[in-house]
Length: 84
Length: 84
Image (cartoon, rainbow over the protein chains, first blue to last red):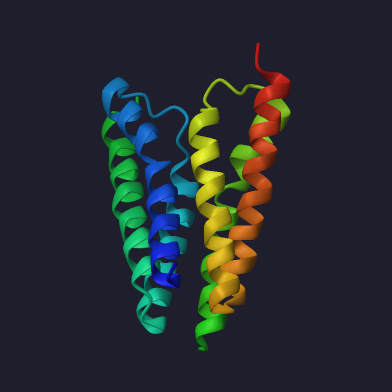
């Protein structure tokens, strides 16, 4: 199995594992468990990983971390919309 | 800045963002927000990313995903210990 395929499968798994929490928060509008500071730290990290992927020209790293930037930015926006 | 340094900073950020939740769960022994299925999917993904890192011989990928395997495996163990 090629390295790229392994990276893409890894990326699909790590990305998929984030989706249920995102859907749950959208449905229940409950952002009590979210920490905006940790979301910012995470978004900075995955944004840097995306940049790292471009430097290394590795598609699996670019795609999975790019997805994570979008999803966690969505969580941060949800936090500011739904917080009491 | 070298690619490896960028990767290590990215890894430190994404790893750091997971630690507060882990400490909170250890302290409060409240695993209500955890989904064992999603933890298993995530652990499989980061384990595959660690393997990908070895294939590519990229230290930042090995270290950060290896840490994530340990931390999320710890969360899964906490889930089975503390669940009601």
